[in-house]
Length: 117
Length: 116
Image 1 (tube, each protein chain N blue to C red):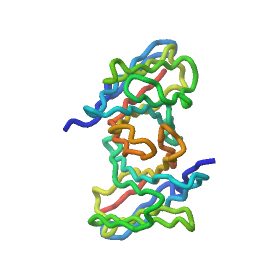
Image 2 (tube, helix red, strand yellow):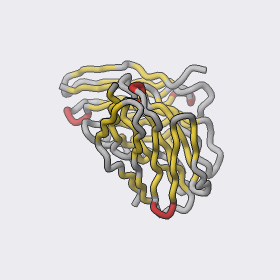
Image 3 (tube, rainbow over the protein chains, first blue to last red):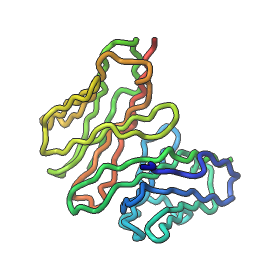
Image 4 (cartoon, helix red, strand yellow):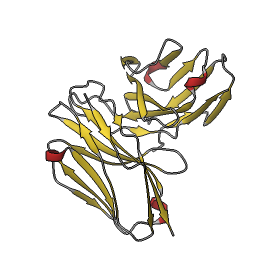
């Protein structure tokens, strides 16, 4: 079974440009999460999809970030326009399904390292 | 408020030594989940273990063992007879049942260096 995949693995852009990150979850996983780790800080939650719906986007830093999950499959995270402080590693994770009040294990992708110059 | 503290920023040991990575958590929820993830130099986060708050049994998996103590809000991770391949950053994380998203709250990570 293929794991969570993310594309690209690295992205270097200039301040003010737009970047789109993609995540393909494990097949059949309803839950998809985005996290990021900026330099020297903890890994922080950004948002959570259940299928194609946003369940929780409380961690999105501002309206320059837009996440979508088309048809409940892959997800994209767009940053427009990018700022210097957006640099970091963006992780995607997926977990099987909503079992009510039981948390499933989240499986992570390799991350996308974003550098904004 | 929920929080995970990994006080050890970096640990360096010589191969075959035992090493314990500390994790202390804070939560007001009565049902919660604790996790350990490993981040090797290649960068991906690899799931190691998940523990439910209502199951305080310690667990052993090969050279890895975990000690969960609710009384001290700790979930420590021990590697016995460490190997160079254990060199990585290790993250402890918490998820609360009252959070419908079950998002993970991470500690800052402990970088383990195992020297040959």
